[in-house]
Length: 579
Image 1 (tube, rainbow, N blue to C red):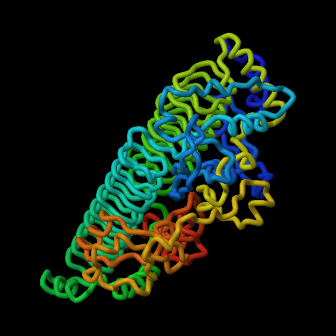
Image 2 (cartoon, helix red, strand yellow):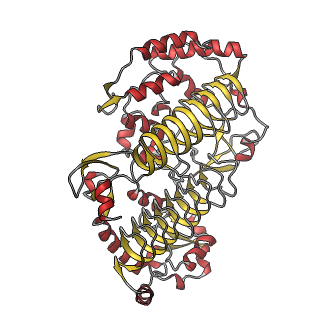
Image 3 (cartoon, rainbow, N blue to C red):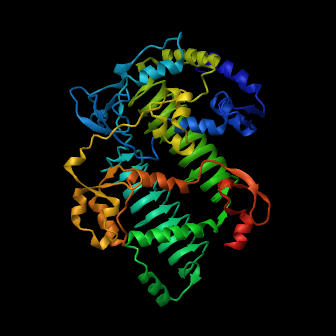
């Protein structure tokens, strides 16, 4: 029997009459399709069809997440008898209440204490936002399974990571975003199973590689793009199973070693000259339209071990099945409109979901959550609606405990009321996001100016001034930094370096100094956060374009923006020319 008969009758009337058609997005004005496969998913989870196009739906989800950029503030802990400043991605200006991790994960407080009744005279989102400002939140979305990852945002089961966004089962990673199964690397973006690497983007199973992009199974190399199975190569593109290549020209072992010995990578000036030279080489490289591996009956980019996936991006090697509009996920099935998920199934319009199932319109749910709707930061909870911060709970609405019978009766009324208002079926609007838009992941994928953010009535926050007293430190301008790493003494660890791009101060750690020395790399002259932002210029957006192959003219899908005028080949031409 239906637990929500009034709602089910209303939603069934909508879904029965639904057939494939086109809609106009009220936010951006684009025309988008509602496909038959979409409708089947709506029917499976009993949700109404979306009003926004896929891109605007993604923007809305990303606007509630801060994960790709490790942005930190100091904020007063709101726990009882606590007044200390703690690290948080909510600033002191932000009205959100935060607890330090030790107190948050303890049994000293209970989220049910913030319970409130649902008011049918007000909109759901209005009431939920009020609840979100009352319930304490995590200062940072740390994974309890991670170790020594204080300066990390999100992630899963990682160790000794610093200034990283979403490290996934990685160890000893400094300054990066979304490293997966990586170890002992600096400056990493969206790379898997790499070790002892520096400045890598979209690399897989690489060892001791520096300044490499879109490479797989490579080792002991510098400045590579789209190379596979290569070792001891420098400044090369589109190579397969090669050794001792310099600027795409073959050399014998002695000739190659002589060339490399002539290049002083320890010098910042020399290294930057080769970075510039490699950028010129990159523009002429052949690029594959979409980069998928073992993706059966699937459309998307950066898919691994996928089946029946539509318009999906960056699915890790754990794979996924029956996904639609899903990004950054692994070991998932039957998901639609989800960003960031692992070991989960039957989820819709959600983000940050781990080890859970049957989740709708929710954010940051982990550890066996099930049958949850419009919930945030809950763990090991089931059958909850509109709740925040719950642990090990059932049958709760707005953090208030109900009996099972009363829960379903009340949920039936709320969902029916929301459906009639046009609220049900929508993710949390950006107007109630706790994240400033410019700090959120949405700013990376959908960058906006301050004026545009304010005009949309979304969350804008003026820049927070640093409280660091630089007079207590010896500061070094980047032009005064030693050019060669061999000229750097240990006392640099006690100094503050001023970023040459932003002027913001930063310091070095012992781990990274040792890394630079062992890998013969110069000291950085740019702030870590700015380095991460600069690396985003190389990332693939969560978007596909259709345009002709640069070689044969056949229409194809591509993850490369045509405005960049790259040499992009379809699958057949790429295999013919490169592989």
